[in-house]
Image (cartoon, rainbow, N blue to C red; front, side, top):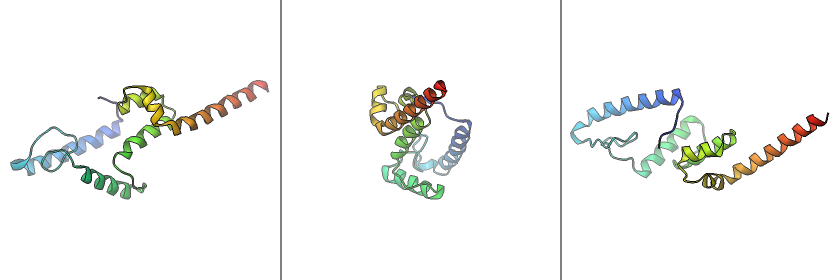
Length: 130
């Protein structure tokens, strides 16, 4: 699926692709170009253990708590909803077939959003009665 990303993300990905192209040249004798954005030094998909090790190292250098690589997906979904983005946007970005899947998966965030909505309505009503 296609999703929109920020200009900064595009810059980072372009740098990554340039570095990956250099790696491809360095390993051209045994490089299998399968057109992956992230791959091993041989061009094959990154194995699960490697992606987990890489995400742990990245979290450590970024000062973030260590999480599994797949948790980055859940973090993204949670951040979208917490930022007030419509659930439909989360559905599209995460690739869920139904928006209900997104809402069911991130129901803990939906509950927080319900609290915020309730507080917003209360604040509005107090302002309207003054």
